[in-house]
Length: 384
Image (cartoon, rainbow, N blue to C red; front, top):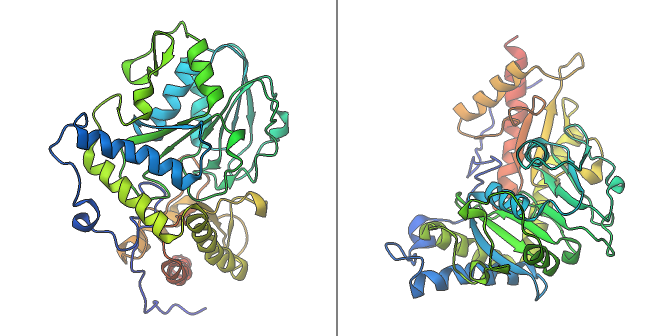
């Protein structure tokens, strides 16, 4: 077993799953030099840039004409919460989860919203539940890609076109990295631009289909809604949210950075190109895992494996999973060598590694990372 330190280092060592690596070639001056800094988000230039975020998002994603895009507070979490607090209640709810954040939405529905008719459809980390258990007459809340569990929904075939309830999809580590079509299957989509496009944190994106708008205008929840959750006034949608008028003050620096990310995605070839790049990135790790007996995917079903937040488990030579302490030692060694930052598994996930393979990561950097993974594993084993 060779223990020679690799001669190469990744050009970018940021393999964390959020905030994710900036796009290749990004620089502060070059990417956000035209930002409306020091200007009101209500000024003509501020509103124009926020509207451009909405319109460019819709164009790059290829959303249907009657879908709306808005910029909302508090990242993907804020977007999901404002939807749950504003829309859930008139129908039973099926909440599907197989990792940390989906379970949070379930806990919030039961313990914070106090909904009485909520079904849990769940599976352990690295697995998918039987999504065919969902009821088309219920509202359905699910996470497209389990960011902390490494398992994604392979398709939307399980969602009925004749459904009566809404489908609410937390897509934060999937959108721009996976095929989420056909869009008409999803009535609500939420995400943060800090994920696949490598934007800055703090803001969320909310996409509403016409059925979601109808729910907002026909259902008035009895619960109190904080200002940042309110999307209607006088029983009508506040359309300004989806036309460049935000609920609270956004960072115009982050707004410009997002516009830069969208321009980069267009320049790469659009949605198909950024998805293809993420899939190709995943292929680098898949080939490595196939060749090395000591590392494996947390998700055991190949078609369910995430191609963005790739979750891996390490094995001992004698068999069995590597203990968390040794995994932490491996991860720390890679950070000390400045070749991989923030790749530890999420705190409540099984011990292992989580490596981001979204489109802002380069294939060659992942190839070099695999050399260092093998070296670090050997060092940890030799230190026993």
